[in-house]
Image 1 (cartoon, rainbow, N blue to C red):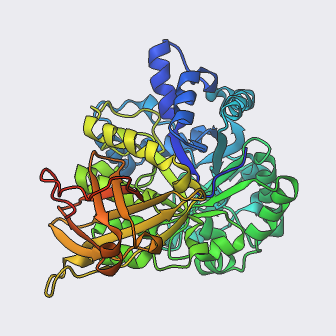
Image 2: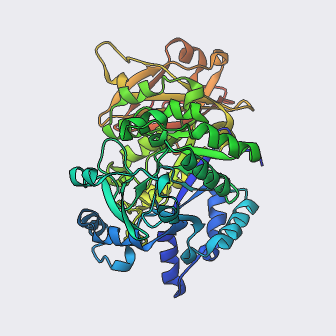
Length: 508
């Protein structure tokens, strides 16, 4: 099945979901127990990719570290006031082997799940963690040279970045996995990309994983870029991504690579071969509520924007419903997911869940769903399934002041979409906590001698305007705080202009 230009991805917290299913079944649930009707619903909602988070094997050492770390435990207790030891399984990113954890059903259960997804036209995404392994990964004993070694002096001076590990009859000092701006993750050990054998071994791991799924989300992908690795560890790394990605693509040309990336290195990772890179910058600007900065973010080149993964939530970020009120949340969603790129949604987002679940936990809290947000997302997901939004042409539009001295025009974001079959849509958002007005310049020059119908697909609002006036002055908008429209634009068949609606004030 041909993939759309702008696909949608849904992230599932696998271990938490299976814990919920276990409670219903009265026994431990595996990937085989994921109901078919749930997979059917994912298809009906228009998703193309399903990311099953944390399916790989983890071990007892990382689990003990997670349970004993007081800072982490405080976070776990904030999420689960009734926290139990069994809820802390260890981070899904402290991997002891790229085989599906036996508690989840093993590799065969994953194969059967993938078959069920493929039967529904869904593609499977899994994790790849290039930077580090768990302290009890077999390589620590068998190939300690694959890891960044330290000295006793390193351990004494920087205990936050090094650990002592038993290796046969000897003790060795290894570095924790980390990025250059923070202390190490104490449940991991750092892979050494200055060693060609490490590069080869991890490339082989990635090649093997590619036979089990259709794409990978690569954790902290920028950390192993040669310049970043050298800055962190003082040693020159071997190039990994171009070599490893090429090896996979030789066998699987359509295999997809998604990079978690920060520090404005998105373009760099795209050039390394990634199909999509996280767009954390847009997320940050939306959370800050700065409409000007959000609009300027969309000035970037189209070929760059097409390869950004747009999100409001993932397992690392706070729940968006805990950060924004509902109207702000909806406005941010309209901007985020009606932009070009990969549309990336997180399990629980549609219900307005407010508690982030750490990847160390395998149980989540019980939360009451937000009915209003559920209704919004039900309509919204139906909207972004439309062909024009999946394969059409996107354009950022210009807004100008509605009258002299009125600076609220700067609060607007406006996009147009044109589909391959002539469909046209207009997205307008007042991304501010106050009423705003502007004139919007439309890109539809052929409407000059027509009456134009604006039908909001997310509400019952319908407006008719004179095409010549639209092209000469623009479309006048008057929207309340966080107000938005998703208009289908078409030629009206009415003989006369409709009267101004009295029940609606958003567009005049």
